[in-house]
Image 1: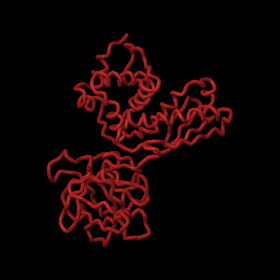
Image 2: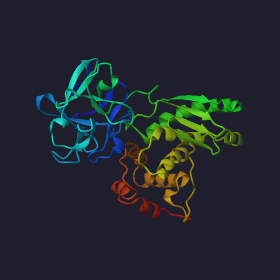
Image 3: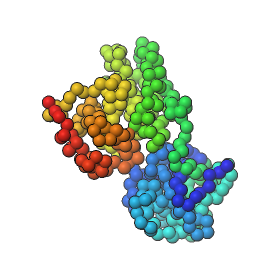
Length: 348
């Protein structure tokens, strides 16, 4: 049974080629690109439907919903001079109103009410590419759209589980070690999701770990892959915590949080939950921007004394692009800037 548009309700628009209608970089400035992007459940991919005349709909980005008065929202707009979509302030003309044509099986064709260029359908062209308005093409999956009510998200294997693929081809002597880490990581994946995501967005369903001789550090995460230095493992076979740290990066999918907080969140999960340790103290020369264990210490202080959910909120803000700075973001949630919070911590 098809999900039907409803006035005032929020939906994610997902195309037949697996992309969603996404506000680029979560920026609500007029003219910002509306693009196809992999689903992540963020506000940048949520659209509030407002009923207009003749069965048409105005689509407001979830990023501005509830923050502006009538007629001041930012909406999905057809930039007809360029043949693509962008974000623009609400005025309600034909290029901001959309018709949803039910094509069966839960799918819709989304058409602009503006007919000056002939019939034009919303089309997901590719990841990171602006949604286009093109002539109807029944064979184009990018012109088939389904509505997903917000709050629902794709189910992951085993309920927030993960598929981990292992590649020990460059270090076959460590294949057994890598296999032994897999159940630990699988156990901690849903725990980490609960700690830093909750229900805010969907974590990746799979990733792979590669033993890579070209890696001269310890490990790093990139996209859906974790690269591991085999020599580090040989020297430190008892260290599983660094893989927990990298798995956090796989889950984060950060957009806007500073790097020191990205690394701090990863070490917060590792130090204060997986290893149940962390630094015993910080020094007067340390800074909350030092990343890793020091920033994790800062995060744990705020979680303990101000808001037990602050790390999840920070991670989600970094993911959906709403993190707006070390002063404003922290003051809005604790009454103090990040620096003020750091300054109050006793140091040696």
